[in-house]
Length: 361
Ligand SMILES: [Zn+2]
Ligand SMILES: [Zn+2]
Image (cartoon, rainbow, N blue to C red; front, side, top):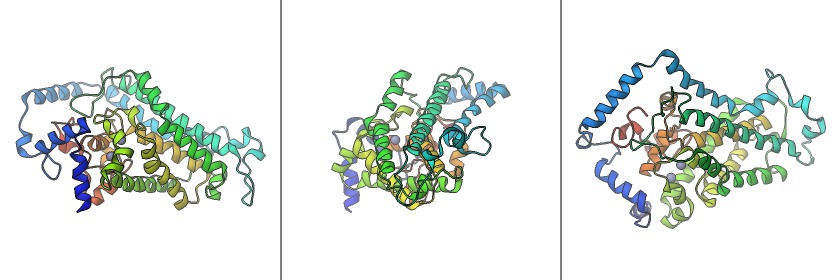
């Protein structure tokens, strides 16, 4: 009862101008289960004509033009450049060739943590983010799509902004990378991470990497849902700043509030490390980089060519996350939509097409 009341209270929050307007609009158009009613699916001749034109131009693309966008898929393995380069048996270089033994040797009983693992971890996240931003630049400006603007998720189109401004805003968020770097430094150097995290033996452990991503997202789903329903005043000071973006862009991923990042990212990160205790340093850095990069990618204002495949597998896509930013009540998960599907809070972005989202997202 209380939850229902709280939810209604902040949905009706008139001080939160833009999103409230959006909710009022969607209440009119959207049926109770979040899908569009027949009345709202009436034919829009203009939109139909546009989509016919889109289909025509797509069918005229050559095989090469259809293949080029898939180059972008390389961004996924590139997120783990640093751990793969330094620890994979297929890599031409190894951490053992570069660093003296005393820098990475781990003494489980009483040795002080060495900063090398931390420095490489921060570098891994930085390199992962570099690849995401570089890929996104090529993608956004049509270098991967025959110089055409990619498909915007929302029918009103992507927001117009200067790329450098977006990039600098993304990197300079105090509640984003600055806070996360502080968390990583403190937890590493005080030695409170599980012992295995300090070991350099082996390479990326893919099972543990998957478990870290899944558990992190499950915890994040839970905290995210609680932020929305527990109390309107807590929502206002924690998560509301991130929700001012109803048509987010890639660079809005970590733009929110200090408290939001602590609740939704830092606490789940710490709990995940205490649950998955047997990761080595390479797995930990691969997890940190993949997690931050994936969170960034789901805020993209454009759909990626692999999104259809991701949706089949229940993996988070930008359109899935735009549903949350636009309608608030659905898709609380970020990397996986499995928790939403289990809890009944999932909505397929295509159920909001063609009115709000493009049909092909
Ligand atoms: Zn978001
Ligand atoms: Zn939210």
